[in-house]
Image 1 (cartoon, rainbow, N blue to C red):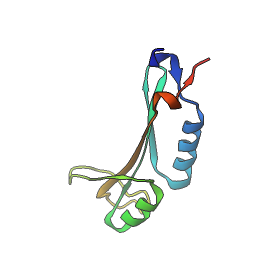
Image 2 (cartoon, rainbow, N blue to C red):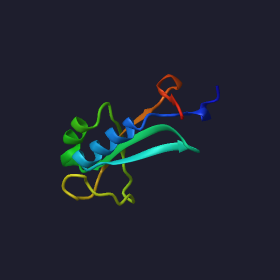
Image 3 (cartoon, helix red, strand yellow):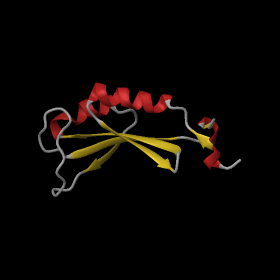
Length: 99
């Protein structure tokens, strides 16, 4: 079967939206056509709130932002110094056949 014949259960998107509402972060649902193949959770933090951000994002990736970047800290709205993010990609075993 071709991967285009599959679509991930919407439960993952609902969980990501709940995370966004609870923690004030951002999410991106990554699709190819109608097939959802991943969800990225992210938030931007200043130096003061790095520890809090690391507690909220499971196994995060940390990216130092350039001085030209203009993002605000998810907690205090100060200029963000880092982008914390977690990417969930779905294997073919986790996908369910679209009805």
